[in-house]
Each structure stands twice: as C-alpha cells, then as structure tokens.
Image (tube, rainbow, N blue to C red):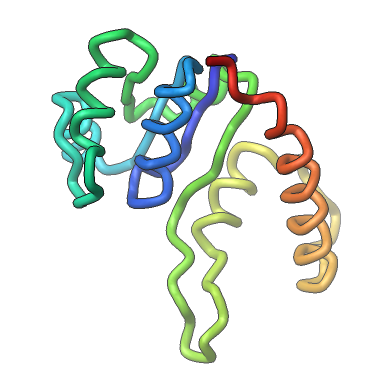
Length: 141
C-alpha cells in the first residue's frame, strides 16, 4: 500500500519509518525543506533509538522517500496520515490550526458556512475511528 505522511516531526517521522519497515511504500512530506534533505540522507532531526537505522534501511530498499511536494505525495497515496503539530493554546487545548490548515487546503470541499467546533470535533473523532478500524489490515510483512 502506498502511504503519504504529511509532517515529518516526531510523530510523522516515526510513523513513516515504521510503516515502511512493515513493507509499505511511504512518502514523507514536510514544508521544511531542510528536514526533507536531512531525512532523505537517513539522518533523523529528532532522537528516537534506532530511527536512523530504520530510515537508512528503508531508504535503501526504496520503501521510504521524502519530498517537499505535498500535492504529489497526496496524489500518489492510497492512505494519508496527517501528522502536523498540535501545540497547546493559551487555554491548554490542542491548537488544531495546522491540522485544519492541511485539511482545509487538501481534503475539505467548499462549504457555504463554517461548521461548529462541536461538529468538527465529532467529524475528526469519527474519521479517526474509521482510520483505526482500517489499520488492522495495514501490516503486510
């Protein structure tokens, strides 16, 4: 299965490397071109035990690639993981603006009115659980 991972920070990079290790073809994408260059060389910009080895092994096998071309990665993939930052806002709640930015730009059709925050929360939760149900069949190796 071809998978795109949008965002190659801690969550996205580990997800991309792990899915590639399971045998999937994974395209990691990020708006940070320096991060893309570094990970494409098999060096993680974060520390996670064994991550550099996973990157190098899967880059060499061709199951893992990195690109700054988000549009191309999305078009090439059958499954997309959005792993962008969700820092806390001033009230301690997750700041979903980066998730909403990616979702609004790439996945959400035009709407006449903005949905309520409760509707968005419900929509995100339902999408998350649908994705989790589908993960049972993801491992190919």
